[in-house]
Length: 63
Image (cartoon, rainbow, N blue to C red; front, side, top):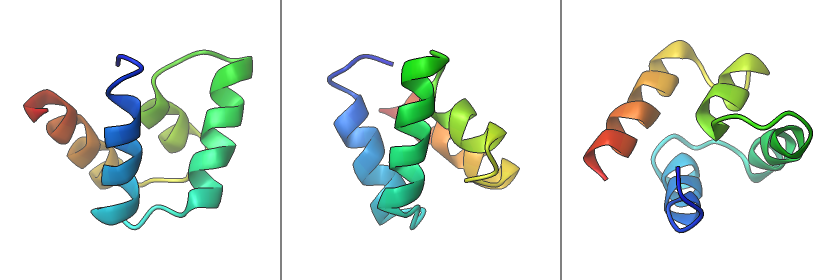
């Protein structure tokens, strides 16, 4: 994911999947310490379901 895509991804997470800002901030903080794709970090920490993870990757593929 490019840096320019990340704001769009965050907007998608908040608007379409109703992921809280706090959850996104937790994932972003963890991604600084342990770099990896934001969607996977959200899932690893239980902040999104597997179904939501699939929706995120579908959205990213279409974007």
